[in-house]
Amino acid sequence: MKSSLIKGALLLRRNLVALGASFAILSFALPRLPAAPFMSPEAFAEMLTVYPYSAFMLSLVVYALFVVQSLSSREFKESVAQKETINKIRKANEANQLNARVLKRKLAPNTQQRLDNMMRESNEIVQSFLAGNKGHLKEQVVQQSLKLTTAYITLADMFRVRSSASNGERISQLAKRINSNMGIINSAKEQGIADELKRVVEADERMIESLKNERFELDKIDARLQYMESTIGMLKYNIISNLESEDILTHLESDVHEADVLNTVLNERYDERREERRVRL
Image (cartoon, rainbow, N blue to C red; front, side, top):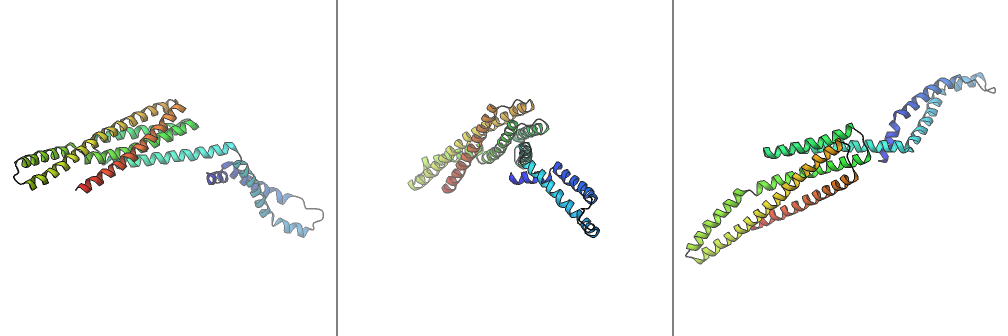
């Protein structure tokens, strides 16, 4: 922030105009000053040769004073802070849109449509903010909406990965294998074969239970995704209608936090289950 303030003050149009104007005025005025009574014509002529350097150095002093005045101005600081925030919002929106395009190629058509709707409404929130009034509260709401969109993309990708790993066909295959092995166990004449197949059946039953739990969690993820889609839709209406409030911001911050926690927990559980399955195999 400090470097942005200094850079902004140095490049501020008003200050650059002051630099150029003071140099032009001093370059014009200094050579036209009358010689001091005690100066000889030769000394005065020699002094005229250094006037351009004097004009430049004095104009730099004027420029520095304008820069210092800008750095001490509350209005200037707020302006720089707002520009920095707007730049962050633009970059966050661009990153979300890019990540969504990458994810879209991996999704089923119906899920692609949901992602498209989510990203369109998220982008409309940002564009409405950039085109309208930019109060501090609205800035915060838009920033949180972008964080929620980021969490949505992460959660949608997790849903995609876990859906492909826990489909109904897998459970059906395991159920058929259990039934087949139970038939063999019931008719087996050797106890060793029956015991071995019982262990296989128990492992398959645990796998089915794990897959059912996975399905339950997927339903929870899908419900959370739908809730986030609804939240972004509501925010779009509020931002366009200038109806943002502290309550909306508080609820939004809570939603973002819950989404981040959910993503972390689900990733940890998914990694644990993958490891359990790897050990069983």
